[in-house]
Length: 321
Image 1 (cartoon, helix red, strand yellow):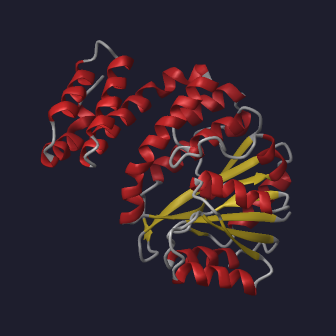
Image 2 (spheres, helix red, strand yellow):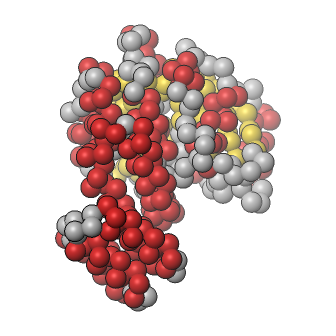
């Protein structure tokens, strides 16, 4: 089974080469790699080296997009370039275990009824050292979900309620990936694209899982700061899920409310008061009898002190809707 591996990059650094090295180290050798540059503003040394890699290897293709389409759009473009029976995804600062493809492809071959398989993750730091127990709770959640035996509705509820399917662990049959149109192409998301893809995919296809830590997610300052930027994308994803699958509304209510609160504070930290007021107004519309909702609206109107915002960020979990 040939696997097309999609690596979207944007302002990449040296970690992208570690990701590629981990692909070269795979025991399953039948793969092609598509590096998709999501229109990085300036082509620096790293991008030139990535492009040169493609020129030296018949297994690697470098694609530079003419406009920024966010990770979801970049992954779609990369997948469209390939013709393998399966598609896999890796981020520019992550790594794979050498047997990641071998074990995932083996699972798909022995489970022909399964259209997508995913596994567990391990955290690494900036030096590539394992951060023990960082994702143990998340891995336990996965282990407790009988993905392949649940009905579509029950699995969608599980996927919407708890984030348990990470793209870096996925190997998906191409036919099934294309049958759902890949990632959302209309208004591509930055943040939340993996969640809405998993839910849409589960509506039509079977998902499998096995408990092996085969993907190493690198934790560093840059991706932690970007997690704030992904908030709005996640909120859009939650809205889309509620529209397409109304039975997820109760599951998503608390998650959406929490995201709105965080978005209010993030916008205030960034000096975007009007956006903060818009999100806090949505909090009130969603829970018109909630004192906390009016509290966040008041904060968005009068709070400009970063120290106060930081205090709220530390204590917001104590506030109930």
